[in-house]
Image (cartoon, rainbow, N blue to C red; front, top):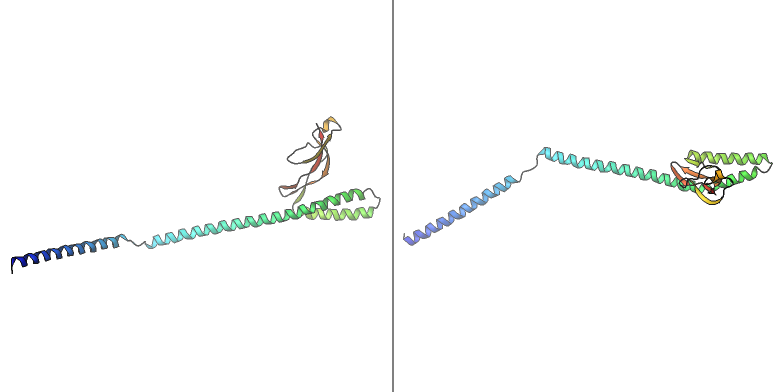
Length: 186
């Protein structure tokens, strides 16, 4: 063999070694990468699934509470609408009873009183209450609706209720109609 062939062989061997070394490095790096990708343990998987379950359960509980509150609110507002529409009927009964009391017919008065009492008791069972306002009470703008002011007949009635035009009503804790009153001018 000539020196030139020997040199070529040596260069080829060196190149093969370099390629071999590079391949070994790549294999080593791949092994390191494979080792870096660690699969989660069973306990970790179980913990993540438990966490997902608890979050889903809490979200469902919140949904149930929210829909329950919405249903109760819908029931209250539906009852309120009906009660507000029945208030003029109650007012008409009160006016009718006051006129029938002027007539001497006791049978008619008794029949109207029974009907009025029955209607009032049914509505009170559903939560309707009268807001108390009577002549001589102190006027409170938060509780009463002033229709007009007239000169007070006496000094002790200045700023107080002189007459109640319409009764006020509450449904539960909410006032659905304020009593309409006439107050004495101060």
